[in-house]
Picture 1 (spheres, rainbow, N blue to C red):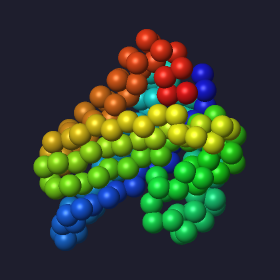
Picture 2: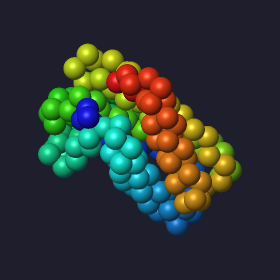
Picture 3: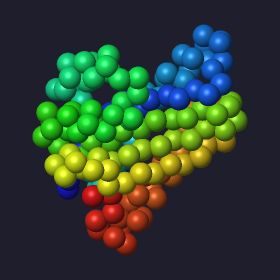
Picture 4: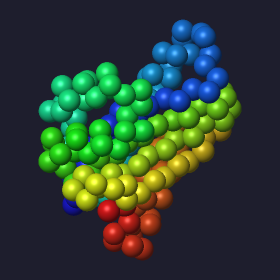
Length: 154
C-alpha cells in the first residue's frame, strides 16, 4: 500500500460569520474532517497514513510563509519528502455560505512532483453530519474507482 501524509485542511471562508462560537465550530469540524479523512483512507486500503508529527517544525515554518498550504504544491511535497511518503494530500473547505460548502483534496506524487488526483464534493448545510457525509462520500468514491482502476489516485 502506498504511503501518504495528510496535511491539515485550509478554510476559505467567502462569507465569514463574526460569531466566535461559529468560528470555533468550523475549526473543530476542520480538525475532525482531517482525522476522518486519514482514518477512512487507511481503512479503505487506499494509502498507509504517516502522521504529521515528525514534520511539525517544517509544517510550522511553511504555514508561516504561506496563506494556504493547498496553494503551495511544493510545500506538500517538502513535507512528503521529509516523511519519506509516496504521496502528500492537501485539503481545503470553501465556505460559500452557511448552506453551501465544498470539500476538496489534491493528492501530490512526492517523487514525480505532480498532482495525480483532484477531488471535490459539495456539502449542503454547515453541520457535523454534512461534513462527515462529505468525507465519507469522497473516500468511498475513491475506493470504488480504485477497484476499477488500480492506479486511480496514484
